[in-house]
Length: 193
Image (cartoon, rainbow, N blue to C red; front, side):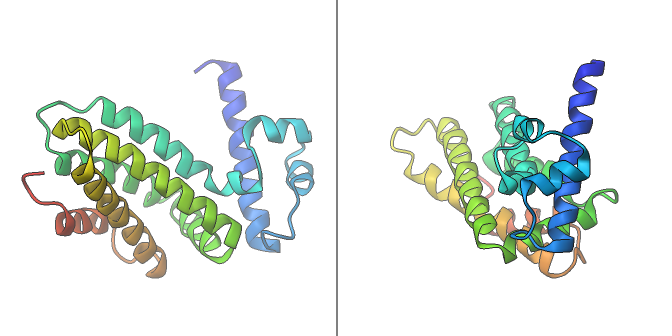
């Protein structure tokens, strides 16, 4: 990573962390983009270079996960089963959420999403995008033209991820997220898939 790329990443991370902190302290609707910019000491233009909106500050990790999931799935071996690919993907997602450094902020982020209607709507849209990504991956695995089976498995897999995240949030991360995602996937997707 070049120095310039590192500086951009530090700026993006500072905006995201400060925005989340302000949203949790003052309430999402009460915090303006200008408040975040002032706290981070960046110009409004700089904010919009990294984030499209206040909602994007909260949801950016989900968008990054979606982009990384697409790259990850595209690189999976052809002989690997759908279930195995999704379990490994679940492990990767869980590792980001359930690590010691980010665990509390991730739990707080999920609680915030659940409590703010505009965030909930944007989160659900991100889940639909995730479903489309999985549908396309699964359809390619099964060489399906209509993709009905792929649609159903993709929707079930996204539900498995979503329910695991919600349960993890609601129980304050009492059980490892990785275990919860794997268990949900195993309940929904047959071994031969």
